[in-house]
Length: 269
Ligand code: HPA
Image 1 (cartoon, rainbow, N blue to C red):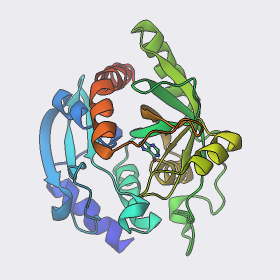
Image 2 (cartoon, rainbow, N blue to C red):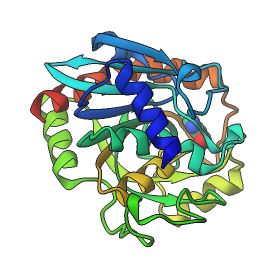
Image 3 (spheres, rainbow, N blue to C red):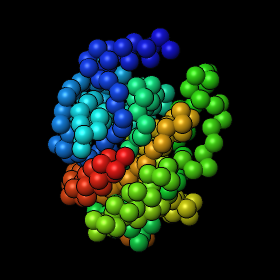
Image 4 (tube, protein in one colour):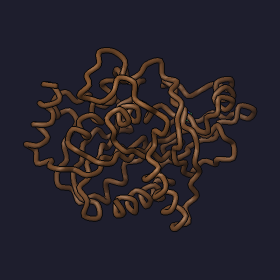
């Protein structure tokens, strides 16, 4: 807890007071930041006990400010298992945001579609997930300060938030699928056999993030919602090579719709 207090005291000294909504922005999805009336930007590397982002497509900044008059704390760039961090490290910022008393956590990510009805460039709201990481952020020594040892996961994504997001998408004429996100360790993309296996397992999309953060949010009783930008189609019977550049390009194009949804949601919260 000392470590957590040090981080929190540092952030409070930087003027971060009573954020209401935490936001985690995924790969190629940093543009929401243009819609924040920024009060303070802090590089992760300045924050005591924060891991440091090693992926070039992730900016690595904590941004505090206002969206539609609401205080938000946004992570531009997140931490991934494939970077070599433990899942405790990956989820450290989520615990910090909850301890700073955010009430809602909104996450975004880029992923590939194993459900072939879901086309690249469209969005998917996470209804559920499957953890295929060989680790869990709650593994190891337990402290009741963070919530239960065995958190319930019967509904990891808030119905309240998801219902609002679905309504907003309808109102704004945005195609929003709902489905199951599978997390793989990465950093390689998956093989044809793995895509086939993931599809058969019930997954609609596959990515390399989000699930550890959502597990921790659930343990801490923090309402969360997550939206995927589908950047590629993972058809095992017709698989084409895909590069990070293409993934970023598609993410950038679809991003505007994600931004629209998040801003409208924040206005309603
Ligand atoms: N797997 C496949 N395609 C993807 C991923 C992934 O993890 N992320 C973005 N597109």
